[in-house]
Length: 463
Image (cartoon, rainbow, N blue to C red; front, side, top):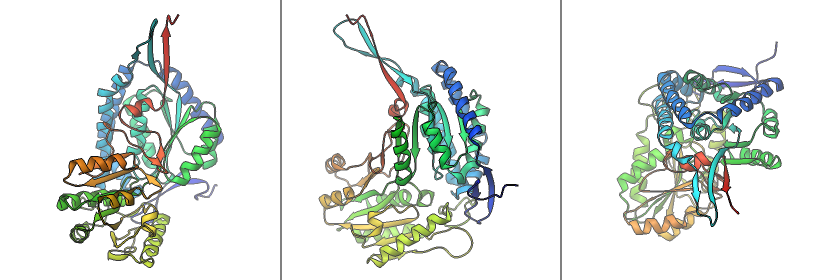
C-alpha cells in the first residue's frame, strides 16, 4: 500500500486545526494522457457548439453553483481557512460572473468589419484549443472561473491543475460543471506533480497556458510555455500601494484600507499591502486604522462574524513572521499584532507596522498575510515615487478629493489597475492583470474573452 505523503498525494490540511481532511493520489501518466485526450476531443465539438448554447450552459453553471453553495463554501473554509461568509460571497460572485458573460460575452465574439480598399474584410475571433490552467488556493473557485468562463465562452476547453491543498474544492467545481450539463472534455481537472505539469505544457494537445500564483511559479511555467512556443498569461504577486493624500476623506480611506488589506486574511495578490500616507494626515490615519484593525474578529472561520481566519498554509505563516521580524529589526514600529496567535490553528495576529521606509523588508517584498505597512510620504509626488518603487505592478489605490490630481497620478502609476477612492477588486466589467513582475496578459472584460482567441483576418476579393 502506498504511503500517504506530500510526494504521493495532494493533501488537504485544515489550517484551523492542523488535521488532514483529504488526500488525493497524484495521477499517473496514463491518467494525464486520458484527460488531455478528452480535452482535445471535447474541443473539436465545443468549438462548433453555437455561442447561444454555450451561454445557456453558463447560466446552468450559475444555477449549479448556487444550488451547492453551502457545501462549496464549507469546503473552501475547511481547506484554506477563508471565513465562511467570505467563502459564500466568493461562490455568489462566481455565479454572477457566469450570468454577466452569458449576457454580454456573445457580442465580444462578433466579427469586426475592417475598412479595406478592395473587397470585404473582417476580423474573426476563433478559439485556440485546450488551455492548461495552473491555479492557486486563495480563491479556489473565483480564480479558476474568472479565467475559465470567458475562455469557455470563446470555444476553448479548459484543463485545471489546482493547488494541492484545495483539491476538494476543485472536484466540487468539476461536479458543478457536470450538474450544469457541460459535455465531457470541456472542463477537466488533473491532479499531477510538477513533472506532470511540465508534460502537459509540452503536450501538443495543449494550445496555451495560464497561471495565477507566485513569481517563482510564473517564471518556471512561463519558461516552459516559451520553450514550447505557446501563448501564456501570468497573474503573479503584488505589493499594491494604497495612497492617502492630505485632502482624503479619512474615514472612507480607513474603511477601504482595512478591507483592502485584511479580506481573505490578507492572502490576496492585489491587497493593499503598502499604505502610503501623506505626512499631514499620517498620524490621524494611523490612529483610525489601528482602531479599525483591532476591531476585526479573528477566530473560527465557520463563525459568521469571523473576519480573520487562519492562514492557509503553515509554511507561509512562518515566512510571513520572518518578514515581520526582519522589518521590525530594520527599525519599523509595531503598533498591533506582530506574531503568531496563541493556541491551535495557523493564525497570525492582524498586524500594523508603522514608520516603514523604502529600504525595509515589508516595503520591498510581498507580505502574503494579515500585515499592513504604513509609509509616510512628503507630498503627492513623493507618494507616487514610493508607489512605483516596486518590482510589482498589479494594482494601486488613490484616496483624494482632488479629481484632477488623482487622474494625473493614475496616468503615472505603473500598475495594471488604478482605483480612485475605492479599494481594488476584480470585476468582469473591467480588465484585471499586472505589469512588471506581477505578470502579463489580462483577464475579465472583453480582454478575457479574446486573450485565448486567434484573431483571424478574413479578406474576400482582395484583388
